[in-house]
Image 1 (cartoon, helix red, strand yellow):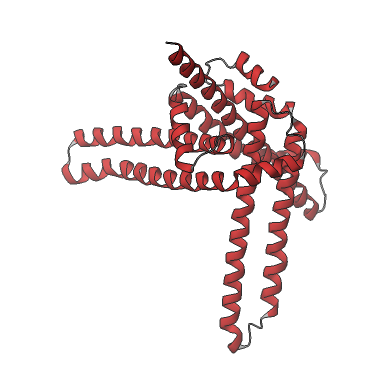
Image 2 (cartoon, rainbow, N blue to C red):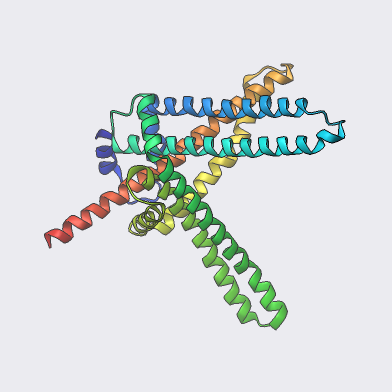
Amino acid sequence: MAAAAAMAQTAAPGAFTFLKHGVVLPARRPGLFLRVFALSVVLSAAVHLFGVLVMASLDAAVNAADAKFSMSRVCLLMGAGVAYLFLYLAAWLVKKVAAACAAVAACSGDRHAVTLGFVLRRVRASLLRVSATVALGAILRAACAAAAAAAFLAPPLALYLTGSPRLLLLGALLAALALRLCFHLEAVCAMAVVVAAAEPGGAGGAVLRAWRLMRGTGGGERALVYVVATWAMQMAAGPVGDVAVRRLLPRGMDRVVVLVVGACLKYVLNFVVDVVSMTSIAAYYFEGRKKDDEKEKAGHID
């Protein structure tokens, strides 16, 4: 429990503390996250090979010039496309669950999480629960985004229909509240994935638990910090990869080599961003859970 103890000692109420843990904890457990990276590479390679080999084989197997094969060609390609989409989503979910389980193990100080078999067992045990939480989070995000879009469109529409500046001010206030809710919900849904990986229960319970923990730890400011930091890292990964490729590879290098090296480097950078983001929100979760447990103990004592 060394990692948990270190978090308990250094987890100040500052808004950036959990982001620091998101960087420090993976650096302390490189073996664990390297195994997660290996799993991610295998899954991504499998999806890519399916797309390249199977889809190309199906496309070549059916003669497009023969009219009687046109419908079968369309059906085969549509079926293969659906299978590819399903495989892609399944691989993405497994990678997300693996990252969440590794982040939970790193933040809790679980020293047994040193083998790939341990990670796979955790993924298998948490896959359905985390997948349901991710699906519920996507629905909530879509609903919140729709509400925010309606709130942003309401002020100019109200001004056009009524000409009242008061309604415009009210609409602007509603739009600001909707935007803040979207930021908060984004952080809540991210924490709900960690809750689903760390605790038993359903998807709805994970979201409610994350909402309650975040509300009890100054959630508004920290949610904004988490979302902005995550988006900034995601947007910076591509340009940083391009700059690194230009600096590392000599001029005149074959274009194919440049593309392959650039793609690999961007893949690694995106994985690092995902790990830092997941570990940061996991550290936030454990800090909130510690405070919640302390409140419950104080209530029992009283």
